[in-house]
Length: 452
Image (cartoon, rainbow, N blue to C red; front, side):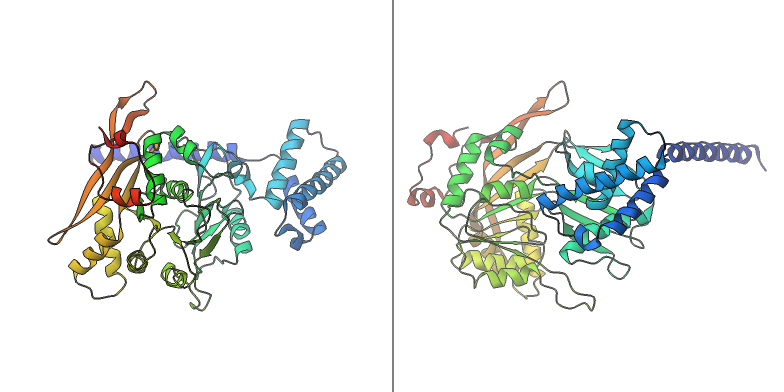
């Protein structure tokens, strides 16, 4: 063995030893001194309380059950005659309640208003997003089976299943938060859960102005566009806040209109009274019975909608959405993944082709140009903030090209001492061509709204 090979072997051994030491330290930190007593108490509670009672609990029932569980835990701890401090006793009771009627170790994270996203990468790595930044939390599961137990509690109440034959599922929590689950053999490091939380009280336009997502002038402009029944697409990357912005824009729809919402997992929370909410359905165990967004868009046309709000267009439903926009269903709203307004048009073109219709590209572009009035582009910045970066008008066609013009754009002016982005969304000076339509609707915007 050469000197170089010997040195490399010694280095590899040292790296391996260091890694083993780190693993041991993590295992020591993870050891719960009360794990055995918690397991014993949990089993006894399951025996005493019927499993049916643990499903579909109302608020009042949940509180009563918490009190019952607390009494059972106190009795068992007293019988054990082991000295446990008041704080430790309270921690055990809290953990048992989370495990029994909540979602286990991640239950406190779900109820923490400062956390916007929870990512479980196997039993020993639980990340959270706080103020737009990812942080490794101190939450741990016992093992893969413990994670699977929580997954079952999430998917069972909404009739979804998760197993080796169906290892991926989209679901939602009772508070409306969106959940994605993927398990082995597809997830190599153990079952993975991703929860995108939604506020119990939906954000309104004032919240987005306070967050810096939009300005009062932009809010006024978008409100006028919605009331004038313009067709709007909100585009952006994953986690850029498209759904939140769509929710706020949808709140501008007048109360006397019938709204049909169509989503994969119900996330849109509208305050209006006359709302019909539709949700897709995955195939059953035999691979049959699936109901897609496209099926629901087609069905919604027979439901006498004044407005159709599609949570997100991803494939062939884009064609049906464009057809609806072009055949009298003005004022429709949707979102889509794209890096810029121009990219959104290209993606729509691709999605229409995914519908399986052998249409000429020019015909597709004419449909898009005729249907869509505005694209609202939203981005997530490095500091975790989400901001509207473009509001662009689709003006028509020139030859084979769809023409656009920016009405508002975001201009970054720098960063503050905390590293936060400083900037503002400002008008470009161009007055949109659809202003006549807004004025015909009886809406008069300030003349200086479009002045740069």
